[in-house]
Structure formats: structure tokens, C-alpha cells
Image 1 (cartoon, one colour):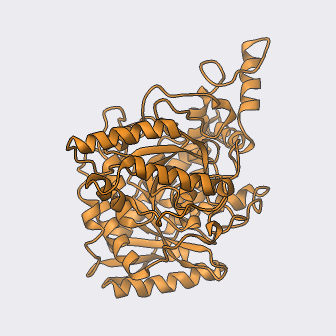
Image 2 (cartoon, rainbow, N blue to C red):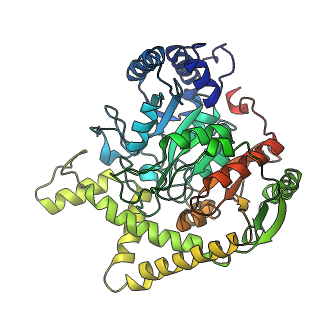
Image 3 (spheres, one colour):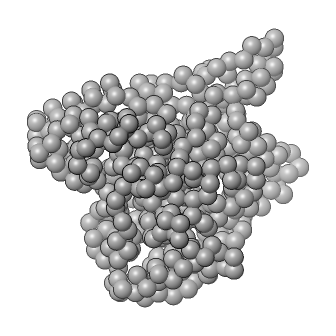
Length: 490
């Protein structure tokens, strides 16, 4: 089916301004978004479910609220939501057989805040099962393709959300990030992906993977759009004891502030022999771009960053083993036929979980088991604290840290499915910020020789989102990444 002939879809800010100002209706904006999904998602497969009827009810409600004089920062903005966040009345399966048919009875806090701000939920996006993966190939339902090249991965685990924004189906999507699951797919798909400081956004209604790492964040086409969505979903929540009471500030205003006079540190541990040549070349270009923006550029070391992958796969797997113990077929989801309770648990979990989820449950259970807890989990947590202290020392010298988002451009579908370690290393640059609880943002920073997006990651100190958006906005203006439709959607 050919793409509809309506004008190129606009971003979050433009859409919200048009609907709030009466130039367009939320129903009209939604209709065009659904036409784009209908025309293109058969190739990309970003969505697990498009909930048109419920979305039109929401759009009509937004139009009535605008007519009544409400000020809505996301008026009529179509948004896609990763399948591990609760939306009342819609399914939330984490792309897993073990949660087929589950429908939450209320909204996640982030979703409720989006709803109050006037967003319209188009549907649920594909993901690696329980957010465990870097390619969205671990979904039990379907494989999502990269809109830049349909033979390549969109990244993971929020690959459906990244692909939906990249393909211009929606101007924004929500994902979750445990070790890079927003930032890595954003880099693969040539969009902006933002992981807030741990605790900035409530985790209530987010199906838990690793509770000390999980965070909710936006994927958008530009930095200011990400700042707008983040400012809506952030803030303290009494239903999440880890949420931060610190004021959110003005990230959107900060994105236009510039970064002149600040110091940017390029991560020494990222500039290693064997780095993909396109990624290495891009780092050199980015140093020039920051200097053009008026910043001082230096090199900074975070010594334990090289151990981050090892730390992460102990901590995250241990927490996943604990969190996923609740999925047993007794309270919700499909239940296997069995003659006794133990067999019920075993058969349900055997048939319900995919191979990667089982692998991580086994790793985590081993790390927490008697005789190994101290040797693995406790040592990993101690190393995690030392890594955080390394970052604190680095930020005493610089205002922001920079490194690649991914070691290579998006690889081909199926290329790494039989090599878990190689797949895990896709997150080598994103995991450190997750372990330290730092805010980090990925934005598109150029193209490889094959015409695939490259992504740069910027990190800031904890709770310094305004500084992060200032750096990202300044760099974005220098880069001027192309905004035309990705080649795979032409």
C-alpha cells in the first residue's frame, strides 16, 4: 500500500501547538497517524496492536478539553507505548506468551500523566520479551525491522517504539531503559532517546525487569520534543518509593540555551582499538561540532566503565530472577495443564518464557544462590558503587560526558541471535549510565558509509537533566541531521 499523500507529519511541539490553537483537531491528527501506520507498518512491524477505537475516543475527549479552554502541553499528540507499560483497557504482555491476554486495571503513572497532558495512545509497540534484548528479535510475537534498512535490526529492547518514531508513524513513543533499551534503538533508528536519572520518572505500572535500573523515557524526532514529553512524565509519585522529589526544572527551555563556555569530556575508554571505523570517524566530527558550539573539549577516563557489562549482567539478571518469579500461571496469563502444583509452575514457565528470558533467570538464580551470592551479586554491587564514584570524579572536571551510543551501526537481522555475548556487547556504551543512575540521551550524529544512522550519547551528573538537554540541543543544531523519511519507508 502506498503512503498517504498528506503533508509530512510534524513533531510533538508543532502538533500540540496546532491542536491547542485550533488549527487542527486531535481527531484529524490521529486519523493521519493511523493512515501512516496502515500504509507502512506491514513492512516495519513496530506495533503489536493498534487500538484505533479507543484512540478516537481519547482524541474526541482532547478536542472537547481544548474547546473548554484547558491548556494541554501534549494536545492531540499521537504516542505509541512500549508493551511493558500499563494502559487501562489495553493489553500489556511484554511481548511474552506468559502474559497473553493480561489487561491492567489502571494506567501506569507515566501513562496517566501523558493522558492528562492531552496525548492520544495509538497502540502498543513490539519489544524484546520482558525488555531482555538488544534487537527486538526476542519478541514472542514478531520481529521488527529498521525503517532505514528493513533487513536490519531496530535495536532493543524498545525497538518497536524507536521504529514507530523513525518511520514517522507517530511523533513520539514511550520506552523503558534498563541497560540501554531506549538509547541503543534510538541510535539504530536515527531518533532521539532519553533515559532520565533513576527515580525521575515513576516506575508504577512498568512491568519490572531489574528494579534498581529500570526507567521510563521518551523517543522523539528531536531534542526539544524529548524535553517536552519528559517534563510531562517526570516528578515524584507516592506509588513509587524510589521516585525523586527534586523539581524537574525547565528541560525544554534548557534545550535552546546553548553550551558555550562549558567543558565536554569524551570518554577515554570508548576510543579503543577496534572501534568501528564509522563510529570512530564520527567521534572526531563530534569534537569539532562541540567546539563550534563554544564548548571546551577534553578527554576523561572512567576506569571501571570497561567492567560495566560484567557488572550489569550479574545485577540485572539477579533482579530479573526475583521479579519474574511472580509469573507462574496461577494469578494471570495462560496456565499449563498439570497434575500437581510444582508441575504447573514448571510447565507454565517452560512454555511461557522464551529462550533469552530463561537464560537470564538461570544466570540470576545462580548469582543469588547459597554459596554464590557473595561471590557474584555482592561483588557486582560493590563494583557498581565504585563505578559511580568514577563518574563522580569525572564530573568534577567536566559538565558532560560523551561516547558512542552503539559500537557499530545497526546489524542485520539474525546476525547475532546465536551469539548472546556479541549481542550483549551492543550495550557496552549504554550500560555504565544505567548502573550509575545517570541521565543520558542519544541523538543521531551522522551516517555510516552504508547510509545507516550513527548515534552519540551524552551523559550528565545525577539530576542534571537541564545541563544534559542544553548540551544535546547545542550539538543537535551543529549536526543538523537529515529529517527526511528513512530510505526503507520511501
